[in-house]
Length: 561
Ligand code: ATP
Ligand code: MG
Image (cartoon, rainbow, N blue to C red):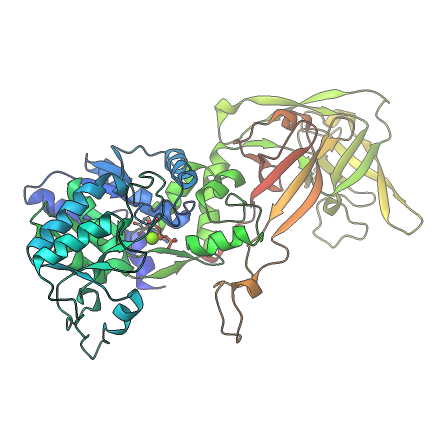
């Protein structure tokens, strides 16, 4: 067991490191907690973002503070309102509410004014070098960079040029504004980082008002400061940016927000970055951003996950300071745990075998009482029709069963869930020898759960009435990738494209008990003995479609007991 796991498990009692930081500042007389969740609206949120959302909104809630939603929309090229809307929907679905909704673009004027302040202080200059030249002259870890020939322009000239950049006098890439820090700094980010670049591109909110856009490092801390964020929480890869974050705030002498980093969530069999997810969508590998095989929040929702299960998962993986990869099984464990408590039970047969009850009167239908959820006494009962012709799961019958097979076999007896005991009297086969039907008799005295002579029957199987069952397309999902690390290229040139699972989606025809005909999209059920399923948004009255949320089998819990 790794150290990381031990920390996670003891977390319930002790505080995580972010809570420790907050409690220390409360003890030091700063009780205010103001966090923010800062997505870039360039894609749909994924399970990694869900973790960040739970941390930011969760900490604010725990300490009586507030959490803002701030769209980090400083790059007009990749951003879109479609993404803004989906992000808002996903956060709400997860059960969180933001104190304020802000956009980095709301602060463009202020950020521009502050850039002017830095120019006037001699801390920023306009550079005519191309971005490529700038990259080439940055030096290396062991060698200092080369100062730009434009580094010592006068304040007046810089003010003039920066204004003309804003006014659209120059083409994309012709000039940039750089902070004037130290071309020999050991932290490469301090070697005169770019603050603004020219982009003659319309922005989804500011339209054509701007043709210069701030870079992340210049914008982020200042946006935090404007909103008086006390704890700016981000992922570990930003730790090298923290000194620069502080540098701008100090140079401008504005509200001192502070940045804290935690390890980003990685999951086995899962690709997380929006850039790659967009590729999956664009190349048609999946049906869209909400394809249930995607790790996006909208996909989890479509697949039948509950918000509580995603929050429980975020809680379970905890907050770590070191990068690690979490077993996807943990996420599935969390959804099973929650659905077991809240999902109503139904019966459905995914691989049908016809059963005829020979001693049942033709045309007779009996409504059987079924428990909706044994874990929830308020969930009530429902009626399930029982009749002469039934479907059972093909796997629940074996012609030559091994010793401990307690389901149906020739001459054997089994209990039908919420119904009678049946005995297999005859096996009917087609010309090729395939079993096509079982002829059975039922014990009329066994309807109350007993049997006519007190004999005991071990097996219980589920069933549906053939005349009453509704047909549905059932989508069985599996991991999108066959390798734990989708980008594993240890086998030579392999890329994630080579690691795709050809069986990640298998469609079967299932027969469902009739009450499922009107099941609403958004409700997940347990198909008894089969798994958890929910109606897909593609489902219609003429063509029912159900998604498998997760199987019943829980390999992760077993391995880790
Ligand atoms: P990606 O690289 O997956 O596209 P991103 O970091 O570019 O994600 P942003 O929209 O910039 O996405 O992220 C918003 C917030 O979510 C940031 O604070 C970021 O640190 C956090 N975040 C992103 N990915 C993860 C992850 N895998 N685990 C935890 N937090 C994450
Ligand atoms: Mg980003």
